[in-house]
Image: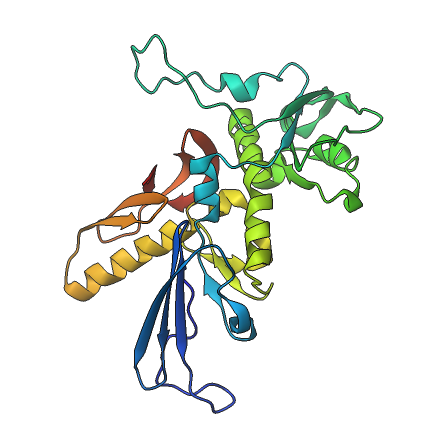
Length: 307
């Protein structure tokens, strides 16, 4: 949802009346509600296949997005080169072997969003001490690659090896780089690999959507935990529940206005449906799974399925 300042009855700093424009862009349709300074509301519904922001770029702009959510649900991924520590080339496919159904002998897992894998020698030990220098290739083969996910053992304590690999990606290549230590700077190598993959696979799509909608860098984007950040700083792990997080805040606000302390939110769009629970407090989690893809990032507790 996109909105201008809260009150439509107040005047702005330049003395002109403030108006509100709310835009809810889904995977299928975009709903636009314009509230004039006298309180009159006008609503429109248009297909989500063209930019609808235009001149709003001049004003204050706060937005949420379902672009990352839909990319995961529809498995529309960038082509990713995954760089991992030597001996861990299969980790993204092996995962932790947790079965959706314990006794399902034919359990299957969605393939990770990986086009190619590169194993790199070198090792960082406990406390961030270098046990073995990083063995860098002469160059990274970036042919047919849109993004590089770099996640090496021990990088949460010493990021030197990851940064050395990242330096091999030419700045002019236009290839997006996701660094595990920056995205998940804590213990847990598998979670770091999975989170870096989400960033690499989806962030290029997220940024392309922002460019298509002509959103200014000064705009504020809603993260999956309900907080705000500059639009150009929004990355996929923090955006997978960006739009749905706005829905949870709306459910909590509507429940409070109606005098309810408990509520269940059902946010159904053309591409995805989001279910949430409100118990007087906003429920959050720090790891989630969307369409079989796991990641570690603070976010609202929401269950998302394809509509």
